[in-house]
Structures are given as C-alpha cells and as structure tokens.
Amino acid sequence: MTETSKPTQQELHYIPVRKDWLATYSEETLEPDLAIIDPHHHLWDRPGNRYLLDDILEDTKSWHNIVATVFVQCRAFHKADGEEAMKPVGETEFVAGVAAMSESGAYGPTRLCEGIVGHTDLTLGADVERVLEAHQRAGGGRFRGIRHIVAWEADKVLMNPAYSPPQHQLADAAFRDGLKTLGRMGLTFDAWLYHPQIDDLTAAARACPKTRIVLDHCGGPLGAASYEGRRGEEFPGWAKSIRELATCPNVYVKLGGLGMRINGYGFEKAETPPSSELLAATWKPYIETCIEAFGAERCMFESNFPVDKGSYSYPVFWNTCKRLTKDASAAEKAELFAGTAARFYSITNPASLGA
Image (cartoon, rainbow, N blue to C red; front, side, top):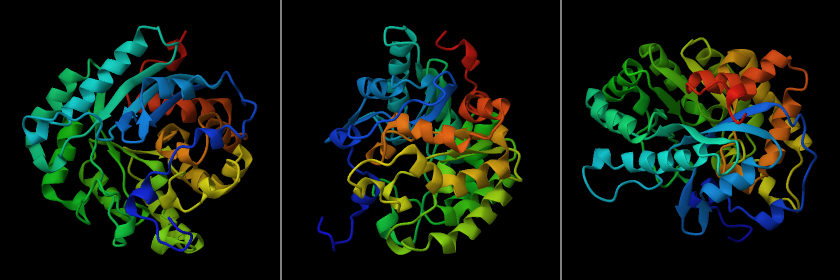
C-alpha cells in the first residue's frame, strides 16, 4: 500500500503481527499476582496468519497471572459439509479440543478456552435452539453463548469483508426471537457492532431482558476512513449511548479491542510499539466512561488477541489495564480483571484455577 492509497477492507481489520517489531519494546510486569481471566481471544489458522495453541501460550505465559480465558467466534474450522446452519458447530468442536488439552495441565496452569462463545445464525429465530443444543453437546460443558456480528457502516471500507449484515439487524423480529431463545436456554450474546449502532443494542436489550448481553470492544468507536479526525466530534454521542445502554441491567461491557486499524490510533505505524503509559493515556476517556456507567461489576478487560497484536504486545496490554485502574480498590480490580468475566461466562472461581 502506498502512502497515498486508501487501505482495503482487509487491511483495515487485520493489522499484520510483526513479532520482530513487538520484541523491540518490553516492560516490567505490574501487579504480577493479580488474577486475570481474558474473556475475549480467538484461535485460527489463516493464510499468513496463524494463532493456535502454541501462539496463545506464548502470550499467556508472559508473566501476568492469566488463570483462564474465553474463546470468541472467528469462523475457525467450520464444518465443510452438511447443513449450513450446523457448520459453525465445527468451531466449537475444535475449541473444545484445545480446552481439553489445556485442562490436562501439560501446558501450564492457565485454563485456556474455559468458556466458548460460538456462532449461530440468530435470524433462524426460535429454530436456533436445535443448533445451540448441538453447540452444547460439542462444547464439553464449556459452551457459553454465541456472537452474531452485526457491525454495519455506510462507509463500506469499514465493513469487515467476511460479514455483510443489514443495517438494523438487531431490530429484526426473527433475530430477536433468536436472542430470546438464548436467554431461555441460559446462554449469552456477545454484541460486536460500531458505535453508531449502540442505541440499536439498547432497544434489543430492553426487548430481550432475560438474555445476558456483553458489548464487545467498548462499543466499537470508529476513527478511520470517513471517521478519521472526528474522534472529538464523535465521543459525546458514543458516551451518551454507552450511558443509556448501561441502564439495561442485563448488559455488560468488554474493555479493550481498541487496537484495530478501524479505531484509527495508528500505533502500528510507529518505529517501536506503544508503552502502557501511552495506551492508558489514549484510552482513558473510553475506559473511564464505561466503568462509571456500568460499574466494575459489569465491566471486564479483554485482550482481543491476536487481532490487536498488530498494535501492541500481550504483556503491555495488561500493564495498560493495570495503569488504568491504579486508583481502583482491590475489590474493583478483582471484578474488572476476573470476577465479572467469571460470573458472566459461568467460569469456576478464578482463585481455584491454576492453583
């Protein structure tokens, strides 16, 4: 890509991971004993982009006390054959295998993929139940819910080329029937959308009050393409929508996912990776607004690796989170780093994990 050419959709969403670049900067680990559940990471094997068991172990063993993780859908290893609706069950089968390997203890104390968030097409409505039951059987007791990406933007360069949802999918009657089915089955919904869509999620959450929902990546604040240079202009509207969403008691929020190119920070363009001090100062308005609106008991820090690994390393990310909570109480930190994720995804008490 030349300096003057516009980035493609693929370039906007997946910054290449450059291990040699990441290795040029490191920090001393802050609060190394603080228990962490990473509630949002992926595993995949794509051309030129591999992140499997060895890769995530390389990150989770980097001195922070990662006691457990949650895998979130990413189109990994769907079934090649059979009914279209059932193909995503292959992803859950794959991740359940990784979780079983981790549970053996052969790879260290961290319980990788202790929770599994798969994919099901919620526009199936009530018929989604049979697919969810198949996920539950495949998950070996670890399947917790689904993510059906609804991220839509009029500026098509911001759209992920792998997904093409309609503009207001969260308002679709069949989609909401699917959401209600999740709630009836005790399963969760991960919502990935862009910040202009947060109000759509608020309406859906109110219409489906028995379904537990978590907003991914601070609500997807955009800062690239047609949103470049508009961060100050867009922030008040984002903050207002976040505060309104927080009035829904069934909704939680993940704090992270701000290292993508669509966020527009450009960390990957620097000669060396950003420090945790720089990241904390940059993200502070978004993180503080979310915590003030939802409370620590409904917020959870997330890595979003390997997607965000193109912008900074795993240990620097967790140092950033610890800097952002330097004035929080011990009880608040326990919630933000592990407690909220443990409750939302029904994960064993993190104090007993990795012991």
